[in-house]
Amino acid sequence: MKTETYNKKKSDFRLTPNLEDYEKTYKTFSWDQTKNEVDWFPKNKLNIAYNAIDRHAESDKKNKVALYWENESGEKQEYTFWQLKDLSNQFANVLDKLKIKHSERVFIFLPRIPELYIAFLGTLKAGGVAGTLFQAFGPTGLLDRLSISGARFLVTNRELAKRVYEVKKKLPHLEKILIVDDKPRHSGEIDFQEEMKTADTKYKIAHMDKDDYAFELFTSGTTGKPKGVVHGHYAILQEHMTAKWVLDIHDSDICWVTADPGWVTGIAYGMLGSWSIGASLISYDGRFDAAKWYELLQKYQVSVWYTAPTAIRMLAKAGIQLAKKYDLSNLRYLASVGEPLNPEPIRFGLKAYKLPFHDNWWQTEIGGICIANYPCMDIKLGSMGKPFPGIIASIVDDKGEELPTNTEGNLALKPKFPSLMETIWRRPQKFKSYFKKGWYITGDRAYKDKDGYFWFIGRADDVIKTAGERVGPFEVESALIEHPAVADAGVIGKPDPDRGEIIKAFCVLRLGFHPSQALIEDISQFVKKNLAGHAYPKEIEFVDSLPKTRSGKIMRRVLKAKELGLPIGDTSTLEEY
Ligand code: PRX
View 1 (cartoon, rainbow, N blue to C red):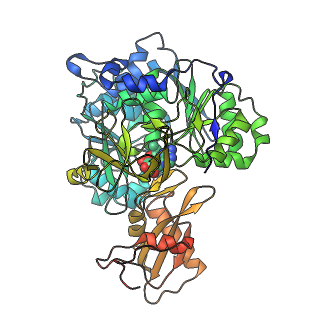
View 2 (view 1 turned 120 degrees about the vertical axis):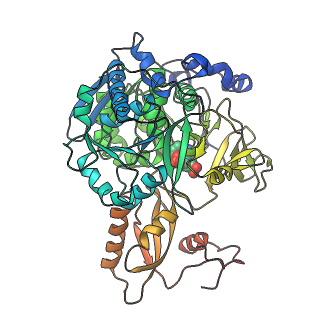
View 3 (view 1 turned 135 degrees about the vertical axis):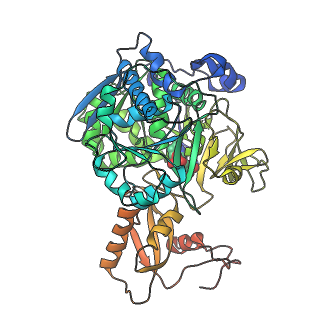
C-alpha cells in the first residue's frame, strides 16, 4: 500500500520545537543525562507532586494559572501553581491526621472536579499511592478495584458514594470515606471540605525513592480480575521529557488534554508531565459536544491539544464549517493517542485546523509515551511514529526473537525506562509474565518499516478499545453471567466506524428465558449499572452455545471471525459446539 507522507513546512512551526533533531538525539540520549530536568531532594530522592507543582510555586510562575476548570453548567474556577501547592499540602495534612502510612492507597472516585487533582497531588506528597476510578464504574467494577488495591481511603462525592455503599460490606479495609460535597452520614465518613479548612498549608513533602510507588491504575485483560498497574515516582522524568519533546509543550502553552483523569493519559499529561513543564492546563467536566469543545479551545486560547481518534472522528462528523465558526488561531500543536489514528482524521485536522494530528502510542502499563510522531519529523499518515529517545522498541516473534523490518509480530520494548510499571499490585507472577527474553511484550501486534516508523496492526489478545477506553472482555462476561437470564457469555470488540470498536456480547440463555428485545435491553442496562457505564455491550446476540476450547476457555476469536464473516483459522483446540 502506498504511504501518504505529510512533509513538515516552516509555516508549521510557530515556536521552534523543543526537539529539533530526532535522529541525532535518539543516538546520543540517556535517561541519566536528562535526569536533572526534574528536581531532586538530597540523597537521590524525589516526589512527583513536588515536580508537577511546588517547584513552580517557588519560582516566578507562582501566580501563573496551573488549572483552568469549567463544567457543563458553566461554573468556572482557576488555580495558580501557588494555590495548588497550598491545597495539596492541606490534603496531605488531612491524610497525615488520618495516619496514612507509607504506600497506603488512596483512591479517588470523582467526576473531573478540582478536588480530584488536589487529592491526587496531596496523596503523592504524603507518600501514599494515589489511584483514580473512572466515574462511570458501578458497584461490581468498584468492588474488584477497591478490594484488590486494599485501599483504606476513598475520596468521592455523595452521589457516587451510593455505588460504593452497595458493596461496602465486602470492603472491610475501606475505613475512611472522604466526601467532598456533603456532611458525614455514615460511620467512617469524613467531611473533606471541613478538614481542608483547618489543615495547615505547610507540609514537608515525603522524599521518595525512584521506584517507590506513586500511583496505581487498573486495567482489565482477557482473563482474571482487573490488574493494579503501579508506577513509581521516577515516572515523572519520562512524563516530563515526553510532554516536552512529543507534545512540544513550551512554558507559554495552554494545554488541553481531553482524557479523563480516571485513565492514564489524564494523569500523565492531564496533570503530571504538562505541569512539570510549567504549562497551564484546562479541564472540562462535561460530555462531548463539538460546539462546546470549539468554544473551549477558543475561549482558553488553547495552543496544545492532546486528544483521541474517536473525538476527532466526532468532530469531523460535525463538519468543517462548524470548526470555521471559531477562532482557533492559537492552536499550534495537535496530538492523539489511545487507538489507531488512521489517515482520514489527520486529513480532517489539516483541513479544519490547518494542522496535522501527531499520533503517539503507549499504554497504562508503560506510564508515558514510548512511540511517537515529533514536531520535527515528517508524518507518515497512519504510523505511530518512532521510539522516544531512551526507548528501544522492536518487533519480536512469540519466542522473543527479533524479526526483520516489514514483518508483523509482537511490539516489544527493552526494559527498563523511567515510566515502566514497577509491578502489578500483589501479583508478581502476572508482572513477570509481561517479559520475555529481555523484552517487555506490549500485547500489541505491529511492524516496523525500513525508515524505522512503527505501524499498529491490532491487539494480540482480546482486549477491546471502545472510544479509546480499554475494556477487558472477561470483566464484561463476568458481569453478564450475574444476570438471572444469562447462563454463559462471550464478548468481543466489533469494529465500528465511529468508536473504533463497540462491545458485542453473545449470550446463552438459562432455561425458561426467551430472546426478546426487552431482554436485550435489560441485560445491557444491568451491565451498565453494575459494572460500568462505558463497558456495557451495545449489541447482544443470543446463541445456543459458545465456542470453547476443550479446557473450557471461550474462543473469542472464533466469535469475532464469525461476526465479521472471516475464516475461523485453526480450530484444533475447539470443542464441538
Ligand atoms: O492497543 C494499544 C492501544 O491502546 C492500548 C493501551 O491502552 P491504555 O492502557 O488504555 O492506554 C491508552 C492511552 C495511553 C495499547 O496497547 N493504543 C494506544 N495508543 C495507540 C493504540 N493503538 C493504536 N495507535 C495508537 N496510537
